Image 1 (cartoon, helix red, strand yellow):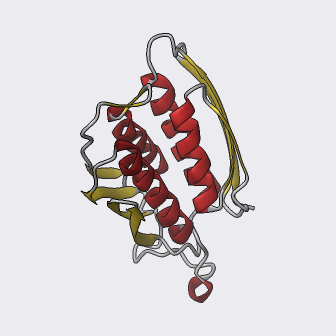
Image 2: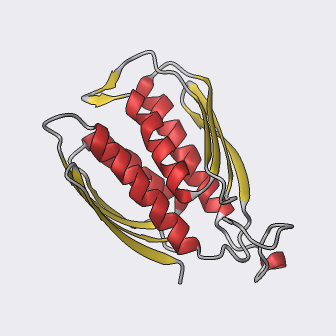
Length: 197
């Protein structure tokens, strides 16, 4: 059972999160940030992860701490649920179209956290959500999940479409990379014999 539950509480936020990597895409998300809820909902659905996320943060300041801390906790939960990563596919990549936008996302569940994020937004906000927080979420997730993650917008105009293509791309590569490879079930997909060390 590849499941995990994490609770993280600071002076800025309180985040509780449960994930099931072998779920059906059932989500329950409440962060107080509408656009972030939308992105997390579609992430769970397209990754086919069951996600239960509740966050209470200092939204009277801005959305930064809540967005970053949810990324931190989601990364920690995915890493914990993967355990020793025995049998996983490990690598995945996708080209994700969203109307006029095309994103390329690639992942290596390596235990080595690294983010390359080549995405620019023409607008500073999507509704009340600062577009610069998309990168903050991805950085927090990659660092805490222990994954190498490359996200690039090849082209696009609409800020909502650009952000959504990045999140859907992350969902799709996670879905593929955490899948158990029947040809290598029980094996650790590394010549080192271990991942994350």
